[in-house]
Image (cartoon, rainbow, N blue to C red; front, side, top):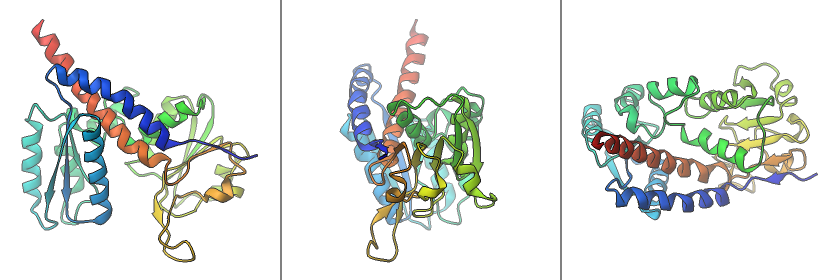
Length: 294
């Protein structure tokens, strides 16, 4: 048995094409969706991510801009800029690229973003809404994974799901979305005893642990749906420099029922769902203004 490949790149392109009409409608109403990305420092990976986010917006007719600060910038300068953007009616989404330099209070910066413009879904108010099953914004990577389940016709009801990783960005919101969809969820992490016990009974495995090729074929239940959130660059061996995920793709390919590749899996979906969240923010604002005029 060879696993069915869930092609995130193709799904992302399909969704982005569908977004164009929504953007055109909003723009014609005077509500062109606008996203601002703030980058502090010159981390090469962050620069690539920010460039891809801005280009993704522009490609479907959205307004987007990036604001870049030196890594030594005072935190208050960034907080003042966020306050300015919160008050700007032409901006619907604000994103601060993580990680931030060590002298920043990351939580304080994220909480400074208006919950109505927090298109990353990291604000405490939005995290709470997600936990109650009524999200305003879903964090982009887990949101993308849910769309991939939908595309792969994966019925989550009653399924045993294991999420490897407990970060606020992926692991925790991913677990909450699976719970809300009716799955029985186990969250595993670095302190989990006998990880294999959990993964071998799982119908669904979501790997977000940040360790290259961590999940092996013998850790899986035959036919499991395997979602690889990891993006790692191999440091040694004949494949040094190549990208790989948290799942040993070749080792798992003949065990899993469905699997996502790296690259070309979850990655393209993350930026796509950022676009979706920004468009949704613009649509909500347009609806509120239309209601106020009645």
